[in-house]
Length: 45
Figure 1 (spheres, one colour):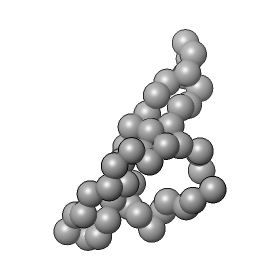
Figure 2 (tube, one colour):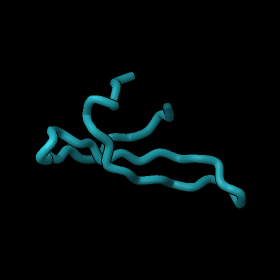
Figure 3 (cartoon, one colour):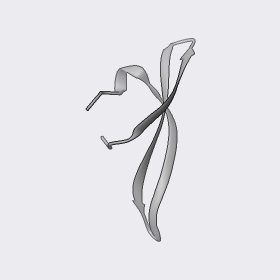
Figure 4 (cartoon, one colour):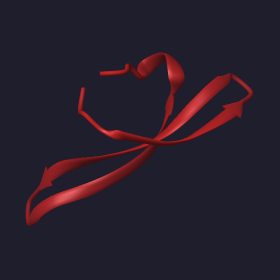
């Protein structure tokens, strides 16, 4: 699990999805990742 920022909601055929961004360590420095994640896997902190 990584902390990230929820930037958008979208309702899909299987339910709600959140577009999230988060940073990971890459071989040449931080890498920004953007992904659609099922709402059931998101948790507020």
